[in-house]
Image (cartoon, rainbow, N blue to C red; front, side, top):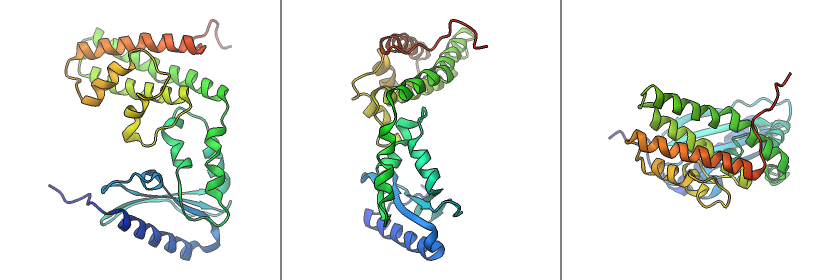
Length: 253
């Protein structure tokens, strides 16, 4: 078994993160507004194989390159954004909001003299209800609708090898919709399915499909396909219940 990635303790990670912080400040000095840990370290849930992920916020106009690299025994990811860009990103709404919002909310400051991270952590939660609903409507068209068409085509042409892959895509897409509908973000990608099952509002059929996906029980294409169909039925009924109409009655021109 290859040794990499290697386990490291929380203290080892925090000590190395502090070393990275000091190196960045020595190199870029007054160009830096704030430096903070995000991901599992920012959330306080890191494991022995977790990465060190740093947000570096710079003054507008300052250019500090981002990096993603292995420095044995650590994997390090350094994201660099100008102050105005970081504010804009934290305020953005997209289908990825349930997956990414936490990275702007759960930040452990390493250097933050003007409390920048305290200010931006509020922004993802100030997005309007209408923006959530419009994002759900758009995403339904972009991804789940198209995925269901691919699943039906695969069954029609007996391309059964696609059905497990399509089912995994479909489950992931609906998990994002569930986060949007509940205005809840997931703490980590690794816990998305488990946390989505605890949210109040979700479509009928989701639990049955996602349990197959979580257990890796996707070896019966017909069973998997029928669960996708059941979820598609439930998803459309859920959208109707939420008052979100995603089909048009006239052409857009």
